[in-house]
Image (cartoon, rainbow, N blue to C red; front, side):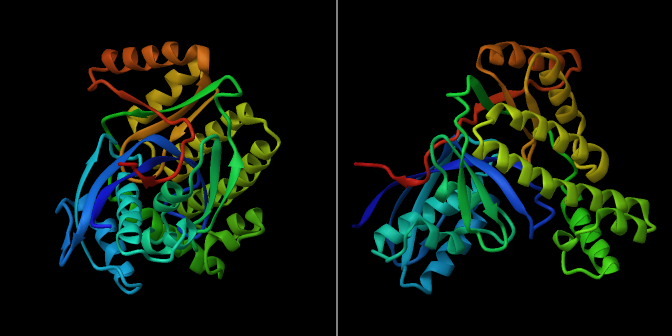
Length: 327
């Protein structure tokens, strides 16, 4: 094979915090994604934008398995916050596997494509229609869970708020979590089993809030996984709402447009809403299918009333994994 086209989906993070890189994440692959036209080359020729760095890293890692160079052009309609860099890395990894006939299935490609601590490439490579993914960010391993929102009479969509939290918060929160773990004598906050005891040990109120969020978020993920296994997709809304409150109040990584989107969506009849995770300005909303237009109209009106740039809406129905596009 000398060339072809590959497509990889973006993602939304339903639960799980990017600043807890050892923790799990509950994600879904979405209809929007990245398309890559690629062919074999003597060199590595990828678009030079910053968002392509994970794809370049994936290509370099796959070189150790026998992949050669690649010339690729990419297109995407994904806004920041919906996993475009990870989707590009997944598409390039698939392209290299196919172009050089590497003996790697999709799960085996994840370690080559994934950025450390991020679930994006794993979601893109392993997603499935009507399924959510529970991703172990330490290893990239993922298990699927039933998440048939359409069959439950619901809709899942993302709101591009055209704004985001301060980019510097990511490093700040990681440093705070690491400091709290050191004070508690654990390798990571995921090792905390006695939340009350941990909060009593820490004197710094900021670190107490960070620990409160990280530990309770892991329990929310466990609860959400159980609800999905039971087919109670609608009950996921309560988990999204609880997580958003914790992100806003305990982890302090929300921003005004996100808060307004969540509040407006819930008042208009959504079941739940939460910032989507990762850099960028997306909010994920779970709503009854017959109220989507009402919710989206209400969000638009809120932005107009506050003189903010208008939001954009993206379908987040759980969708198939990355694949080669048939000729």
